[in-house]
Image 1 (cartoon, rainbow, N blue to C red):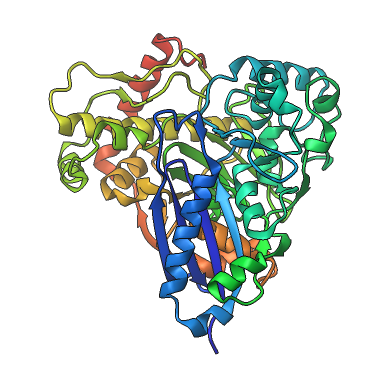
Image 2 (cartoon, rainbow, N blue to C red):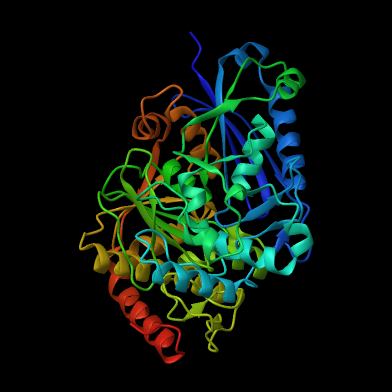
Length: 481
């Protein structure tokens, strides 16, 4: 008997990935496409270009797939960026390019939403900023009133892909709606959103848990690929999906995803509340909490500053240079949101650096220092110890970076064999259509490939480097703790 097959779709900032995996996490087929980006891709992207990429990837995997195995496909789900929103008209067509999570033009609206939410003593998410969905909605409505009059539904990036697959655009999931203001405690849209902000109640979606079956694959798409009836399942944000793919889904588990940005997430029994708004808590499908935070720093500096260079060579050289003794904060945009909030934050480079290899190595270390600061804050707020970290994202591709991070954190870091957002989406697709819950699905479909242990000789120099990094952040006024 053949194993069941699940489809995971990841629509990222710079490209699309489609993955077909079986119930044991084995890859059956996969395909990737880069998105045709414009110069302003960090502020706006055409969601129909995402769909074109998804279609091209699906065309490829189904062309390669054994026709007999098509009958084993059970469900599909999607993950995409958190905080990215799209206004749709009554025909479910975008009225505007997607307003990206990384668009910083909504800073004032973020402050306004935060002040209103706090004044109303909202128990849930109040840490609104320019990366949150709700301020982006407010910003759009007030600046484009003619388009606003045509809005039928506000959707998130994941929802748009789910809608294109199933025809259902009016449903979102617990993780995507968090930064749009949805109250995960009382499971409702708070009254202040429509009473004190220019948002209409009918624009807001129904909300379900990730893994909930929303509908079935569009008949035209079934016919295009000669597929059986496939369930379309509510997805997750990319950070949550990567956490799931790493295997970190049980209380006490923590995950770091290093992709375009650094995202730290865990699973706790209780919600962690952060007065400064650096951390926020998603709701786990099984009723736990998934606290975490997302930085504006990650691995984007590698693709921008070292584009076209031999990364294998740079990693080999970095292995010999560590610890570098240099301080680099590779922030590529203005402002930081985690592990500290500072609109004035700017990246910096140690003036003593003389070679590309030194610059690369110090950049790896700088991100590791940010990761350590993240976990220090988490321990302080939660009162819980961090025993180990599961890792996912493109940063996993560098064994040197994994070694650096384990020694900076002084914690073991577990690397799964395939910790990608697309795998996370596939696990979510399987979680309630084949397995009984998300934990069961993740346990079956993830496999740990390697454990990076801290290296004794690196602990002292990296602790010294971390303390110097913290002092530099404080001296520049970015960090106040």
